[in-house]
Image (cartoon, rainbow, N blue to C red; front, top):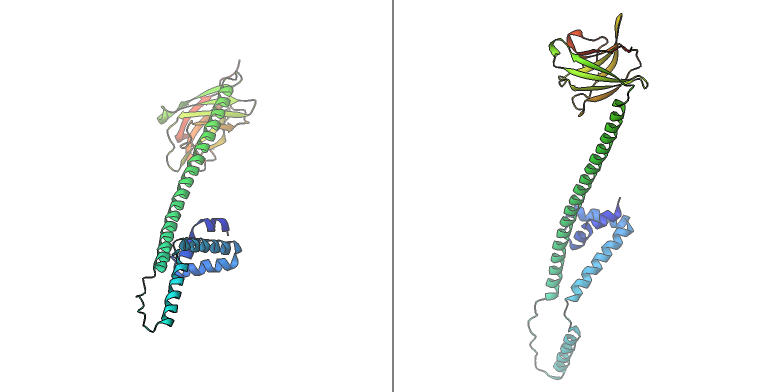
Length: 268
């Protein structure tokens, strides 16, 4: 149990003021028996209330006592019956209750303000975390972009345009093949979004005989922003193709769904 947080919640002030339900009061009492820190805090609050009520108590108590004593002495020396004044209203009791009510109202306001402050702090912290995430993502994106620019400027990179095929003549992609790192960088921004339940699958091809080798599926195609994907390729590729396959991919390409195809240019 976080005792400091419990004390700071304001529930002990409400307990002393008597505004809690019976069940809540019993729970607080049980905690005072279990945790000395809570008991000491309750005693401190009670002492503060006593000090508050004492500050508004009558200041002439000694004078009142002397007056009563004089009247009693006079009665012993005089057989006349002394008519006692009607007791005045006990303002001390009312002042004590008023102080308690004011304290309870103040405590309720304090608890409410404390909760509002906590909510505002949580909002600020959430906004801060979101901003930090955005900055981190921006830095990562910038680093990736700079890395990609360096790769594309490498004169040893092999560029392979992949033109649209058949019913997908408007489709287009481009492969940048880094044979030194056995990687390709696929720029697929001119492919349409994959329909639900479908994924694009990339193929490395040898032409004689025609042998396709899967380089994997692009599962995050629709959610990726820049549509540039890094794919491992250790094959002696002579061409690259992209087909649309059921989610999870296929063992062999579905030729009716061949979107793009490009042949690696032979080097002189």
